[in-house]
Length: 352
Image (cartoon, rainbow, N blue to C red):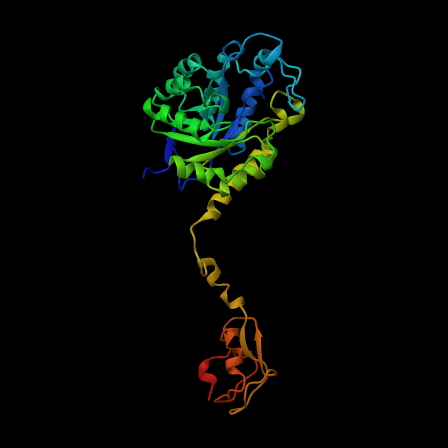
């Protein structure tokens, strides 16, 4: 069985490793390179491992039409009233910004990543030596794109939103056939924001077992609770949309986390990871010093040699240096072999 582990820019990700936290900028730059760089700095200061962009133009994503399926009119959509083309125009990260953003990430110790949405984006990102590629959920059925990204030899992270197991199998098979042996799947619900009851996080260990790959979580829910639950279920990667301040607005602001939340996520994900351990029963090393706080059987009154134990002179109390309480009935009626002071822990050599 292959080990469920990959390496991205020198960082081991997968079995036994700390969760890899990705801050997703997406459209939260709100059209400002200065803000984009500020987001990079905030992500680094908040403990993220990587910052991810999305590489596309409106014209590579859709057609500039304002009717039918090209117009967003679903009542529950955050982007109701937009055309697809206008939405992608506003959310896109200009390609000329990528180099300074990647440079700032590397200066601050962040791993820069991106989601390419077509072959031209992959070619462009290769010029920046992007260390890994993320395939977004709507593109996980775009096998030519997956093959194109996989052929670079870089690791691939593939989100699973909307995909059936058969479609995921096709995506994984296409990536492997194109030469990619460094794959990660991200459980994802492609709704914004995602309702916790739709997240089905138990899919994480199931996907890891089915595909024998590291599996993480692309979390579009509000807050960080779902992300931490994902880590508890084995998520090797956690990706969250990230902004400076939700009140500043923007295409993804509503379901993005802020710097304090990202810092808490990074800290608590690490703690959750440490807490998982292995199946274990019995006292831990730290608990051994606490064993004396258990209850045990003590002499509760001064006793003379030959005197019998009774409910009055035998009690189950703390500390735990005497015989375990399970021996209470065994000791009742037994006689002590010598004088015994109140506060003496019981032991079998007290019995005459």
